Image (cartoon, rainbow, N blue to C red; front, side, top):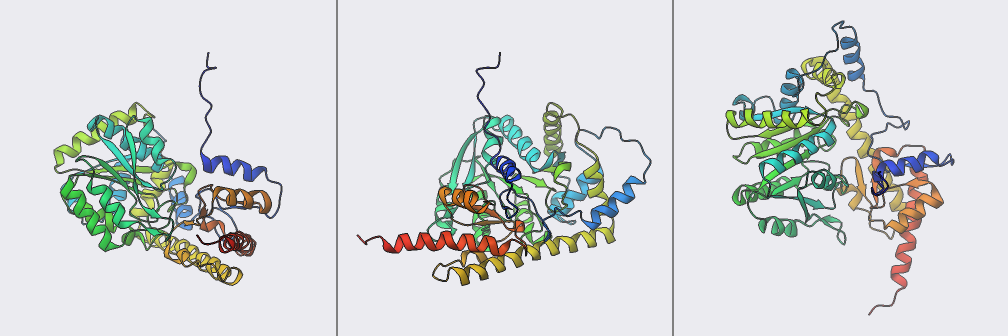
Length: 409
């Protein structure tokens, strides 16, 4: 009956994780999947989350279904986290928010809403992008195109080409943008560049979809939300997808939210209704545990302060291993310019390695990266960083030898 169905190739990062787990080598290193690991190579159980769990686990109330849109306290607390407590859009109740199944669920709900709201529109995503971005919108039958983002020659943002591409878009096109810690490049627009993009979005009547998966991992919780708040200060209708997997270290709990900044309170009410309709037709109601933990932390001053400190420590550790990798490569491959490593930030490093070079590292060194060359920085620690740096330097040095030996035309 199902013999004519296509085989599913699987999520690239999870397929790579399966291969990593089957690898018997003790020296193997997982730098593929986007998880934050501590220096012991473990996913941390944040102290603030542990304390919130102790508080909530002592609550003897029964575990009933949540409302379709999620807990009210959770939605208000996470709105304040992304928009700021005093944002006019919140005071005017112009933000439509529902809890979702992680950041992926937020993007899927956004895709479904876009298809219903703008059936003839299309979405534009960065080149390169997170591999799953395209999946959500193709599954919703939304046309997907790309705009230039990365210059592989200079290893910088191709900003002039990005602006030129957005300038050519028809009005009501949806543009997916990442406010902080761009996945996979680790390169973020400057504030001046963002202001130019925001001006263009308003002038061309484009609709930004902001994917905020790493709030707190760039400069800080509030600093990383600056772009979201700046766009929400305009009259631009804006969609914001939030993930709490990384910054609360609650990956398997699947907790996120989707927010739509509308022009009026009545519009927001209608949008909430449409989002609820889509959620009901997909999964019914969201799970309660993660949202209860997050709400407890955000509503408790001491817990929130501890959580903010823990995010700062995670962010600083990533910056430290990034510097350590740069220092090691500068020693082991002195003729290769690796300064681009320090210009990137957040969870990922875009190495510029080719798929064949990535395959070489995987087969010969037990080092697992995505074929795009994306490397997950927190997968590095004091035990493996020298092994990784030595292997990367060998590949980079070999590439340089091949390049310099070729005759000039």
